[in-house]
Length: 388
Image 1 (cartoon, rainbow, N blue to C red):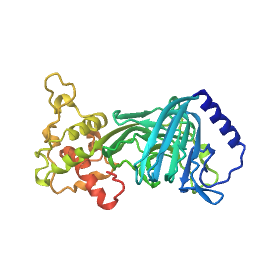
Image 2: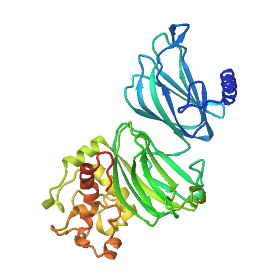
Image 3: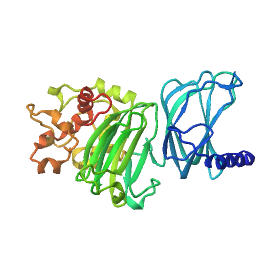
Image 4: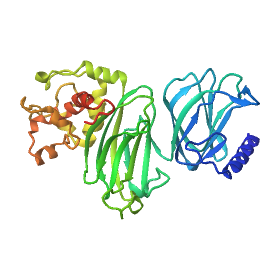
């Protein structure tokens, strides 16, 4: 292993001296950009007019130990494979083999400072692919429901001044991700957003001035790499202001998130309530209870001792499918347009209702609508993202 590492360092040293001006990072090259593209389209190389396969190698060198996200926009293995070797402090920390893939997919490798992509010698055609990589972000784990950022006290990115980001952990079972945010403190010309590395589309964005962001949902699939990013925005109207004068070190927020599996979303769809039965219909989906538990109790501050029962030794509130809040929160006028609750600036919080003179009887309807109805309503307007 030591000999292989020495050869790798020699190759990196030699290639670093070359002046390679390509749009994408070419093979046998040290890729030092934080975000770049690798394109492999040659199935064979030619040696004196004879087709020959000599393999390919790329070296992705990171400034510090961190995480790297690989997004294969397209991939054809042609019966062969691609290997990825991740190193940390000159020691092999992870190894992956990619084959039998068609189309797009993403791979997250954590806690490394060098990644070597290797296409071995084959007598048959090489795999072909287009790959975009991105390193230097933290990771949002699917089993951890709260992301807290406390500005300069954190160590989540290479550049704490102008940019901090997190990769959403890839999961082939996830169908949607529900998000809400509170305690948001952003400086001038800053934004907190969720965007898609594949399409470059911003799916959700919070700008300065908002302290809360209501429950939102984003459709998800395994080929869709999502990134949560806190960054400075360039001011198009002021040539003297650039992002270098902006810092996220004094910003902070708490984001509550929950990944919903395909079976969860199917259950919610099966138990959709009729509008006339909203207050008393049955929603027998554990995911619905979990979703309200993580977002309703933490963000909306519902008094569980009065509004929701506890049973046995279970410490977590047991949410029954129908409205279990006090009666004053469970009687929404039928004439009210429920789609208004899909605005993320409208928070299902009693204090918010009182401040904005909204009927308290619609409190439960607000919660139900954001979880059950808004994704379907948004899907007709925007198929890629669902902003509640």
